[in-house]
Image 1 (cartoon, one colour):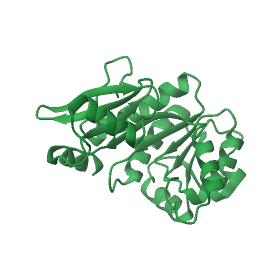
Image 2: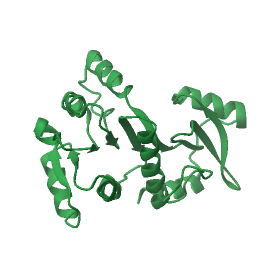
Image 3: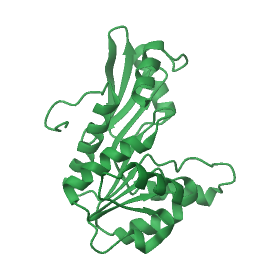
Length: 236
């Protein structure tokens, strides 16, 4: 397990990424965060194996006094089959109060979409001051047909979460945050991935473009082969 007292650097495989994400989540909880976001933005990443590692870790910490919540009944049924070795209560996001029991100490919500924003917000409110971890949300999907007021509600809701872990490949590097560290931008070089800069708030795409131009003279225009191989391996 990654210890947050040790120097933390960009991971180079999915196992290290998952360990970092779990350790960062517990550090955020220890510091008082109750709404926690973990987001691994690898193309074609399968969330279920990562969710399993979180579930196994939650079992060790909370025993069976926690809930795993999924966006639909199909995903919940799949988890019940694939997690047969774990003593976990699995619910769908539409189950409301049944998904937030009085005895629960924590909650793990896996891959909700923008369709479930209202239901998710109600679950978070029911959870109160108990840790509620949202893993790989896809709340930015389904923009077509999503009105401006709905997008503003979603963005307001997301702003109440502490991002404990975030990693996303960029065309010239990577955007990464591992709590309690700040947001970091890394660049791919001939010697491998190198730290480029850090910022207090999550940078926008324009911020990242400006940063690459200032630091390297390059724009984020061409995907470097070595980086693509790295993140393809991470996403498997």
